[in-house]
Image (cartoon, rainbow, N blue to C red):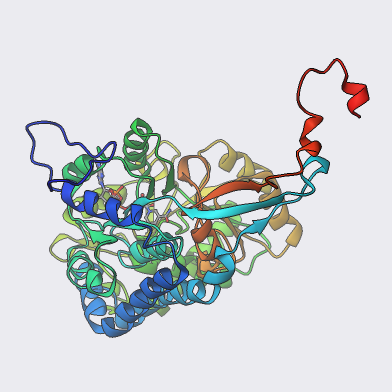
Length: 469
Ligand code: NAD
């Protein structure tokens, strides 16, 4: 592009074709032109997103069915409605969020104007995973566009059908000088990350999160990392086993267990386990019938690789429910494991499938100790009839999100931040938190050009300080 200035960090390694350079240069120029800043422009992009969701509902449902065997109902509740809610909420609140926030003043700044300006970072990169390929692409995108950024979206290459809709159809609804979808797997994403971005929002595994953060560090680019891990689920002795079993089985098997906030393992006493196992069996049969493989409401594992990994986990502990698998169908039955050792793979890695190990603890204290000896989880669940016990669990542990006597319904709320802590991530989004994540909070003080006598007091020499006062 003769005559167009190169931006720092936009150079590719000499001798290699850079498939991203032109796109990134175009978006940078659009950002510098200032066109993404006005509220009107931002609202137009959000309305574009809304229209994309409404006009392509069927196309998106088909893509999600192909990628993840999601039923129309499942796509609606776990992807489309959540995206639409985030867009609508941002549109309703955009003007309020964009307003400068007044800052409190001290004696020295009484006559000044003091405020926080929420300004866009510039060129933002969003990297998304395959398990909720629409929601985890559009959710962050809402915040990035509302905050006035130019955006490159790199969806997961594994959820291919959704990726194609995002690449082919979504850009038609947005200003293409400010927004682009780029495609690729690990290698291409590695090359993309060599470029300088002003913000990177990554959703995926802790392993790749480290790669992304290391690449971002080279440019001192700030990051949000939405990661995963093992989410404990404590079940107290005083619970009604069937109620707990219904909720745990539902949230464990939702999206075939391929959910970052799914309850990953249960901690309970041997006595509760004896009641919980038949109750889990009854819940699973009620949800998916006697042969869950024939249920239209249970999906399949995303890939051969993940299927093999999950099938390996079935040999941990002792199977008390399910345990069947069918490679030709990428099917893993809803499974419950007991007598599981902490050192076995099923207790070492994030399960990400419809398998639920139960680990025995003798008391709430022991459960808290078990949780605190491990990495901070993305979500922590505590089931108890005693509000004191739930409170104890909340007060004495740490996690990205917490739910008492419930599954992950917290993430449907625009009023709550969503994000991890420690190994499960850094940063937060949803609702206004998304807007704030993608905005630099610029501290501003505007002073009077005159009134110099008020400034005189601070100038040296200080030998006559008392006279000045
Ligand atoms: P992943 O980390 O393999 O991939 C995520 C993204 O990174 C994809 O776009 C992928 O193309 C890219 N990528 C993969 N390998 C890369 C590499 N070597 N270098 C650069 N980029 C690379 O994750 P996934 O398998 O798509 O998703 C599953 C993981 O995501 C689980 O750990 C899950 O807990 C987590 N997750 C977290 C959240 C959350 O909101 N916290 C939501 C969904 C999934």
